[in-house]
Amino acid sequence: MSTPASAGGTAAVELSGAELAFGDRVLWDGLDITVEPGEFIAVLGPNGSGKTSLLKVLLGQLNLTAGQARIAGAPVREASSHVGYVPQQKSLDAGLPLRGRDLVGLGVDGHKWGIGLRHRAQRSAVVDDAIAQVSAQKFADAPIGTMSGGEQQRLRIAQALVGDPQVLLCDEPLLSLDLANQQLVSALIDKRRRTHNTAVLFVTHEINPILPMVDRVLYLVDGKFRIGTPHEVMTSEVLSELYGTDVEVLHVRGRIIVVGTGDAIDALHIGAHGDDDHETQS
Image (cartoon, rainbow, N blue to C red; front, side, top):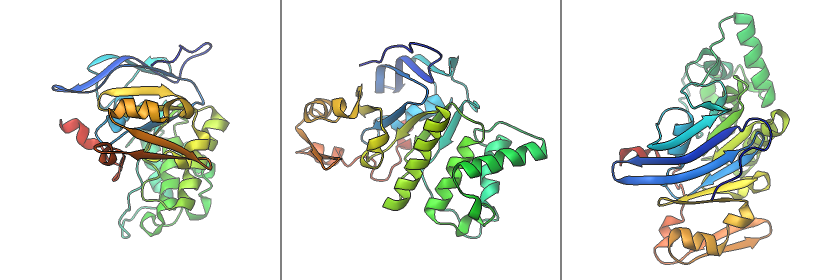
């Protein structure tokens, strides 16, 4: 499936005839999708289906095997200021001599996907503004290793925002967070896209925490994919077709429950560890 080209203005993300393969293994091909400014796309699928690799393509870290990828109307390139990146929440060493604002500042210095500001006052203002956007002022000067997972993840979001990105790429940002912090982190990302018209591609193994925010779903399974609204994609018929076996999708009190049968049971434990970097090893 594909989406129509942007009717007005420049699309935030465009993939046209996109193929990504490692040797004989094709993760996906013929992928056409146009993501509009301010649109929230959930990227779902089992481990190894190419979710993280898709983000790496848009970050300029992997080259497509075929087709084209564009960000804000321009070909994808590494370290683009148009793109912000929010990684998984991973615990940092308690003894790490780094304050919260220092972590955010790495995005300014260009050590990650930053904007390379050099003037100290300008740098400080940009960092303070990003911290304020995630309401992290109270712990911005605390050692990063002493913070909770939710506090650290707030600052990772702030780090992704220092370049005022047009596209926010999120790779399992809710992993290892409790329900309250999942809701907080999701709300912060949703707030950013609504206040700044920032497009969001959100890789996750669990759609329910972000379901109210999602405009469309990109579901990847074993080289196949579907794109559409949650109600179009998250159905028994569509997932059964993608997995090649019976899958039942239940909608219960605003939540989506996916139940596999036979060989699909293991496949549907999507992203148990939230990391499919091993895709690139095939």
